Length: 415
Image (cartoon, rainbow, N blue to C red; front, side, top):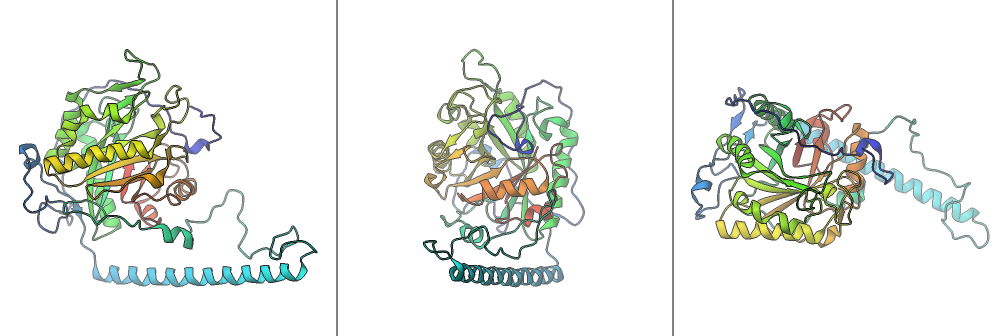
């Protein structure tokens, strides 16, 4: 699929088609030796706040994040390495500033009449940064401006909030499609243990941070044809949704219900999901790529959502938290172009809802890092996410590589 926007091919997300496939039986996920599964102890960070009363559906779910205890020697080594990197960054910044001052002084001395002192001309002396070969890319480099934007100043997390203490590792897709992501590509008895192993890898990559496995299921799927209602979207049945919720509930995991609105709207699609979102382990995601507010066929052009749509969804979630007295909700918004999310600065933060902007592009690691810097870092909302593709990332970045990004993504999605 090609979009008429000059978007780099490696960052284009293919249109998804729903194909029915049979489901396989379930087996229990096996725990890895030496890895702790937290429950609702006071230190788990996911327990319901003291005095909060929940309904019977809420009490059936017990959160079980994965935690690898840090090694004291490794912690000291990491602190030393971080300090060395900080010293190096300060030295680089000072060197760049000295070089800039020298360039400016040289230009001021030689500026022709009428030319603004300090303006760069064709003969101006350039900086001393090393040249990069056409196919070579340096690793992720943080600028002082990038660093100043994060972490975002917002409301303090309420009791029971998952972020920022946890990292969430999610498998994305649809249980009745093999083409929409890993969640449907493997039978449940293979997919669920694979997710637990993957989440454990992330826990080992950053010992001391709890990792919560998640199932990210597309429940409203954009379509290439208008359908009976002319909305270019298909709502999946309650039975399909309940099947995925059951997998997560019995394991102490969480679920994201993903909405691709097509020609519908966020306001019209959320009401029939409220009964699921009222459960303490069920959260929400919006996909602007397939929100065709300006018309067109989903998949043939990239859609868009606005801050008003995100604020509406957040208000629905906040109301659920208030009414049902459940822990704060998560709201994930996908993004891999500038226009996919408009007016980001008008998104309202509420302690009852934690908002994650998820970098949703695929390609080589340097290309994904560029997309993260272009579309996530400059326009902070609250928290950042990062998507990994088993088939389209060549090669796929490791947990250690992703963790080193700034801000370090706290929501990780595998497709």
